[in-house]
Length: 136
Image 1 (cartoon, rainbow, N blue to C red):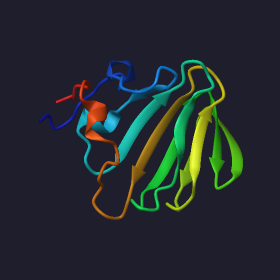
Image 2 (cartoon, rainbow, N blue to C red):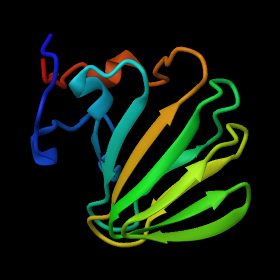
Image 3 (cartoon, rainbow, N blue to C red):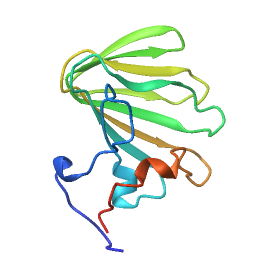
Image 4 (cartoon, helix red, strand yellow):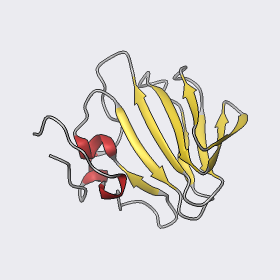
């Protein structure tokens, strides 16, 4: 495996096993072979897609950082609503917080990074990546 890789985001393949109304999912962690933290990019095509399904990370202990690279998204954080626009970071440091995110504009790009104190283990099913190549 290469010691580093450089790719434009448009060159990172998408996961294609989702529903037709799902956002584009670029599995950066899988593509680049990152094993110490999770990182994924979600891109809304219509502007009303769920970017992050409602969940908490209580079982995994992961903290997550959400960075809106473009567009805007509504976050629901333990029942509170927050609108995050371009270049806004939303940090969820308590793994027990229930969270979700929905795009409010077409082409909203949301970068999601997560890690825990213990060695990182992805919560994504291996089947998601069946048809997605890696950078290596």
